[in-house]
Length: 627
Image 1 (cartoon, rainbow, N blue to C red):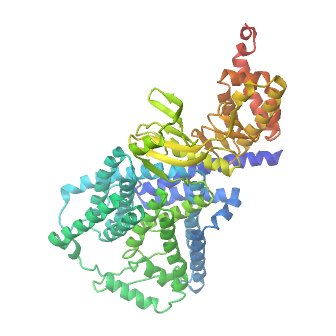
Image 2: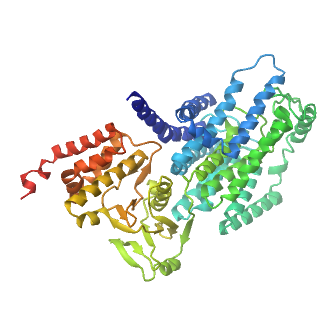
């Protein structure tokens, strides 16, 4: 009994951390530099709301660690971090700081947390990024307004609000979100979203330019080239042409914007660093070695202003191999999975980071700061998306744009199965497949980030992974009016409501008991089907049960808690015919079937729900019901 209570409690903790805490932690990691007073606040928030929860999740379910270490990107990171720690054996420092061991762990937790989050709640990545990008947009706009009256040649915007206090470091973060808004402009099919994203892109680009840093400009060029290569649409061609024309105009009319600061001592710094690298080319100088460079201007610097040179200096060629593999693997996966928009975003951010790292940075492992936006965050996102793709929790069906003419051709001679005041909702097409339409939602609803058609497809895919029959999705469409649609192959069979109407009492009892076992299986597998009623459950031709109308569903990482089980049954009690069969005439059979799969505590919870409903509605079984 105590072990079952412990399991129930650990499941509740696991669900809470992965479904609620990790999303908040990722949002704050992406946005808190814009409103916190210093980076120490970012460190504390990340440790408390992302790193520590990810570690607890792995402790609660060690099997999740097996899924993580199957990802090549994570394997490469572990080799890189492991070699960095081994290099401490030839450290020039007499004493080792314990923080040197914590930093790789916190970075690994970024990979682990993204892997868990994108497996169990991949639909949250889009709204998380959008929320962080809006915060960055508002703060950047305020900084530009405050900076504009004081603008003068050579003056650089350092950041303004929040913990951004260095123009070069601030430019990395501004450019990161500049890539995000560019991605939205390149991939969105909705005019309203495009009209909002284009000014946002202009504002973030202005913020990058106001810092006076040229490194993010090089990085943005690489990101634009990569995004154009992966999207390969008409907008990408226009973007390339626009970038070439803008670059030519700058070189022709304002060449001093690029040439007035020369090389900023980069070539001199790189030459000095290469000389130091040559002292220990294979094993490096050690992860915690100091690097002091004094170029011709007399100022002492502690970074080579190049990530690749920094890796070679600290951990040598041996450590450089897994590091460069991570970069190459990340770009390769992004190109391979370019049909999935989220991979385009993550790999474009990585391309931006590679461009930024060409002339900036040098520390190989650090606490959360601006440099994470160049390397570790994009790599962790790609690793998390790859894990979700491999575990089939990421939507695998690409979304196509359905032009009016193609729609008319698709729906020719179709039979209307369901309609509302705005027109058809479900159509049976000539080939026997079904086309389900979802009306356009308001711009501020979750349907803008996760359309109901995509939820339908994702839920169907995940139900099949859980061994539960569901319609096979053939195509996903977005329409010109903002509506979406899903085309699927229906399951063969009849709804339980139809079947029960034609059975006598004894056969009804047997079928209701089987249905009770099926409901318990759903609950034990974490399936919370909000629209659960006898009209959405099929008895298929092979005698098994299947689910239809899947848009309103969530699949939890663990078996459902008792409150959700009760709420699920409460929904079925809203339908008079279902209530009569399941909760009045044959409730004992329903509970018996449920108890065959679920625990006694879970079965007791549904009995309490049925009893409380009977007490609230005595007319359901009283004399008034028979008159």
